[in-house]
Length: 318
Image (cartoon, rainbow, N blue to C red; front, side, top):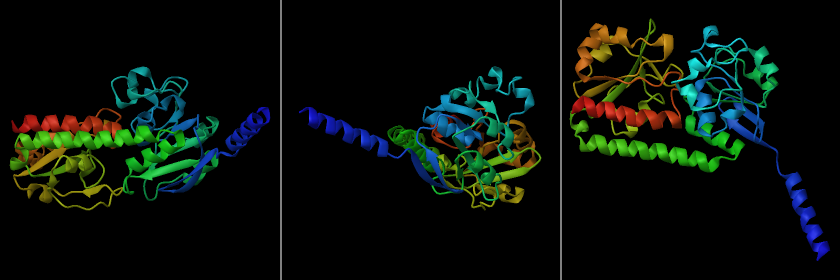
């Protein structure tokens, strides 16, 4: 009996030792072999941060990047000031151990190196730089908004790394259920009789107005039941392109215009609304603003944006 127990214990121990301690992820910038359950994570932007928050592992963050934060938002030791976090998307997780690592497009590689991360996560696009340099510091995974599945793929991949697959699938289902509930409410209120179509436009201050055709709010708008009110290019990051004033002025009256401004210093919504185009479209326009420092997309984003946008539209047509 003792011998059988000993052999069983040895077999279990050998199996544990043989279990893989790493996982190879195929992502939009290549493939990376990452450690299971990493404990020192750098999220280079709000998109990656949203996935880390959604999986409940933000206490493992040692670094965070953003295009919407600057020196004035930081403490003397390089952390984000608590008052800058409060009331924003950043407050949804734990950033107490995270050092700011710079702009997401040009992160401070020296700072990241000193943080000794064991995983770096970022959103990316064709032509984005620093992947090789980042990968020399730690395994790096990048997900593109124009990639198949985008945030769902990023979330599912990271869930495998942290053993949170069930949680990820629950979140994905919750987003789908939330959109279906919103669609039923809009249908019951007769919204689609007035506005069967919709467009999502994002006015950048001094940089033109973009029509989003993928990922940025438009996926939730379609899931709520709206048809596309305007066809456009996806030549900017694979999510949309600049839309002309002429195209906007040609929109039919049964097209809901959802003004979806970018955050921070990039917000050009007021200029757009006061322009000739904005004035012409104001009767069929709603303005939807995300939380400060919100990612463009992700499970936590959709779970906030979809019901909030539904409520805004219902108020518009009542």
